[in-house]
Length: 458
Image (cartoon, rainbow, N blue to C red; front, side, top):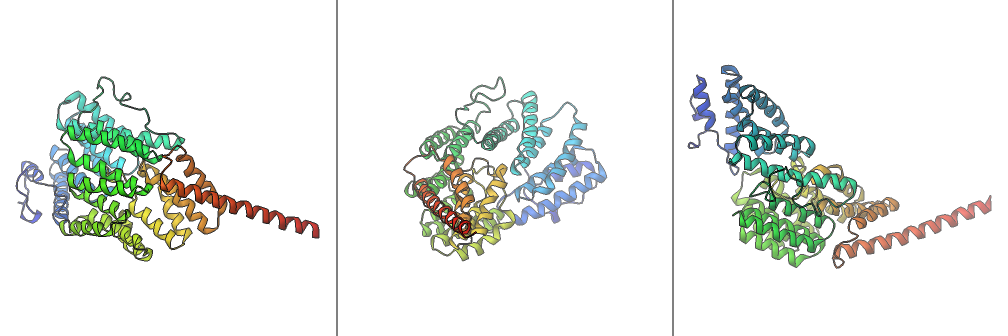
């Protein structure tokens, strides 16, 4: 990779060979939004030049592929499918028998479809990428990337199908369902630990926090064996988020702090800050948030997603739901984004629902928690998806819709029917359901008494 240049400093392109050279200069720097936007502008210009100079050339494919990755980096997905489809069309004409460039484009397209919750389409692209890589270059880095993406897809897709059927998603799945001939270490580094972590998330979905903790430990061990300590830290900190929401605050604080010590990257620190805020340690959460603000002043995810979310969580701990709602307005445009390296989704949505509950605005709260059900493809097996059922039950109770509220309580309690019995959240939900059931019974008795009086008068 050459030294980065701004688009204005690049030479005027006159020939196809010059075009290919300058397209190679495109670099991706996730911490520098200004350069990103300049680079994306240049990639767009390069694509237009390629359309004019050589519309069916490898250089055009390269320009389109760079555009895909640049748009993905700042979560502007709607433009990506058009570029991917055009790049695939041209590349198939250039190399009808397939190529690793084509496999990379398929992998990128599959990742985009996965992020958008279109898991069936994601499988089609990722499976094709895996098959092509296995045939053309099974030992290449590009093929390993395809395997890793496909492993993540498999976990999410199984979870989605199982959740729609109301059954545990990945229990006892193991590695037996992978493509034939690939062995128990399917995909090599970065895949086995993904599956273990996804199983951990599924266990947490059903309130099996002890089982989830053991699976997270195994996922972390697998990641460490592959020298992926940042991945291991992400597994630990997302596990901490499940712990804190279930009421295990001390364990959550311990895990979040340990994850930051292991790998203090952007996503680990951001998620740890959220955990600490939810666990009541507002000072530590604010410290991490301020560090992120200083380190990533131009990072969209930090500025538009994580900082508003963390600060809203702090506001909720300080019993200031109005301020939380105001802070979360910044996150609204990208709150439905999914970040495939983190097994959580819709964080701003969940906290906004919590804020509305504190404000006793049941209708608004119910709308927020409903998003977890409406967007189950995005949520997959992230544990907050199960907890949103409880949030919705509480919101409906505030609106006075007792029967629908009881239905939601029953749905949540059915999901957690075999949950760890000592969980604070489970005890609270059962107590609330019992109280609301008694209220409903009293209301039915009173309604029957009124009906009987009216009949006797007639």
